[in-house]
Image 1 (cartoon, rainbow, N blue to C red):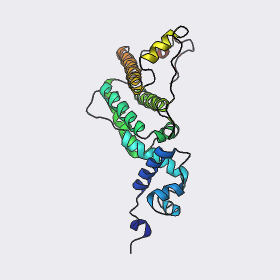
Image 2: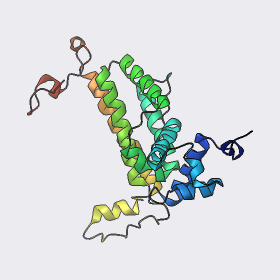
Image 3: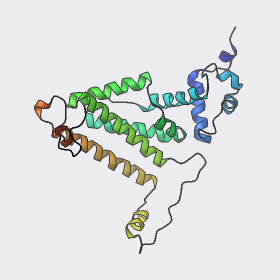
Image 4: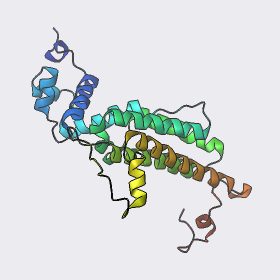
Length: 234
């Protein structure tokens, strides 16, 4: 005989997808097992068959988002790979703004995300980065993308803040920037692309400064002990 869960047509994936939609509508603070159960047409207690508590539900939302967001093109060169990864990650996060704060504060350790990370590191290693450097590169791009999305999204139901036109006499540069679309979606897109280009250009310079006998470490001032604080720690 079919169980009540089976009759309801539920699965863990369906529960998480419904929770993701609910968070997009009411935010993380508005998410509850009761509301989620109502959205799925079941009693709240039914959901505990799939997630033991709300904390596990929130971690599941990060897992579900990461599974769809973390994609790496194994055939791409390292720069194209990083650009594609950042663009896809940002696109998925902006599609579900309510979950962005969760992704920013909870570790992403799903098997699929770790496999994508391994692929990204392999591409960077083949390009000449050391293993630790490769992890630093991916983490830097992921952290930058998450932080940028945090700055882009508004709380569910909130109206985007309007930046009043500043006094051109007192703040001429800010006034010009506002006239040119500062804070608009197009501005966010341009700002993201600009900063990502700067990051990747910086990573490329790390490779360009590398000497052949360094065995996977960059010839940066800190690596050579020229930084005021002394040699970089291993």
